[in-house]
Length: 145
Image (cartoon, one colour):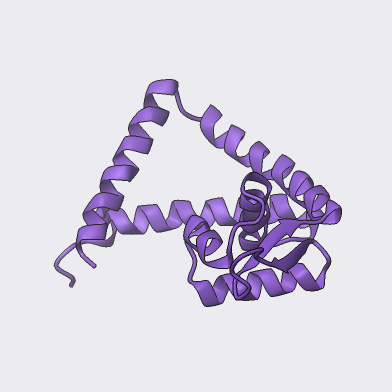
């Protein structure tokens, strides 16, 4: 017997919701032939063209080596272009190609459908409360690292 029953573990409920969200978003991104991490990178690149890989990794919540793999795969597929920074030659700026923008827009249509369905299952008050509670969970967990 454990000191805390599994059904009382908040982390298990968060993990189950995260897995369901990722499964739904993976299905939503499939028509664009991108993974959720690739979609996240494309989405941020649409918002912040020229961003460095390190900054993009922080925005997407992944490690720099993971982001380098994501970017390598996107580059090989012609969805992004990487060029040396004008002043800092060792920094590569990353931008969407027209094909990358089209893939991002297709994946985003599906991802927004997922987000809209999720939001529709809650009242405005519940959405606000959930966001606040998840933020508080994040703050607590950040202090435990």
